[in-house]
Image (cartoon, rainbow, N blue to C red; front, top):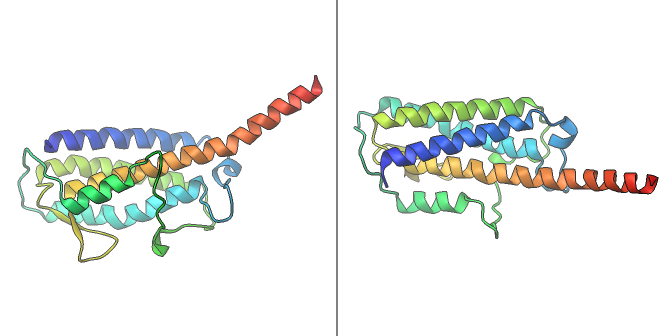
Amino acid sequence: MQSEKLIQTLLEQTRLIINQAEKLKSYDLKTLTWKDNEFSWNMLECLEHLNLYGDFYLPQIEKNIKKSNTKSETEFNKGFLGDFFSKSMLPKEKLIKMKAFKSKNPLNLDLGRNVIDVFVNQQIKLLELLNQSRNVSINKVKIQTSISSLIRLKLGDTFQFLVNHNIRHIKQIEGIYERCIIPEIQKGISDRVSRL
């Protein structure tokens, strides 16, 4: 895969993610904190989960890009593990549920609307880092994973993993919104019908 094509795709996907997150600012707090049950996440918890990952990965990516004296290459060769992790994050029809690490699980935290701003700011930072990565080797720069300090992924794979992880949870937020809003719509329809 061409390095520039990968970076360009990730930039475009991240811009779309920012647009989706910006829409959440128009939702009231009741909608943002609605959940299916006590064990499921609400919209803000989904975003906070992503923020916790951003807190781990973004400073590390920035540091490793700055200290790298590698040169950019035309081709990016996915690593076996990086490709596996990235693909496992993508939303599918039969989504494999994954248990979040305790340190990355925001279930039942008292979260406010500022979670959205933190997320959007992290995505803007991600755009900057993607642009900066054009000056280094996204094959040779390695990033430690949140799973273990012994497992390190290529920078290109790390970016792909982060963006796919964001896509996964933005889709989850869309599903939560639909489940939250449909009963309200149905209630509104039945109220109007009963008044006829």
